[in-house]
Image (cartoon, rainbow, N blue to C red):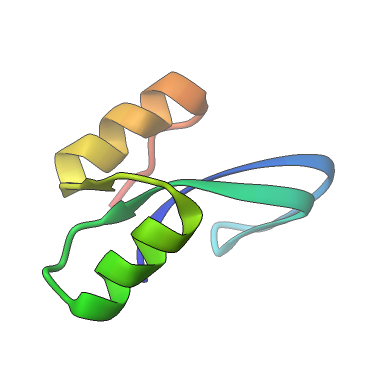
Length: 67
């Protein structure tokens, strides 16, 4: 699954590959039309958004992803 996550607490950056956080919470999932993604969004009470929506969330919460 692809989505937007906010993290806090102790955060460790792993080069350009990503990061780990002591605490994290999803804020949105990429809408792929797959039933498992839809179920995960309902479970976590987060919206399904387009890739453009994920980029907007990144601007709101932090860095804009590249690539």
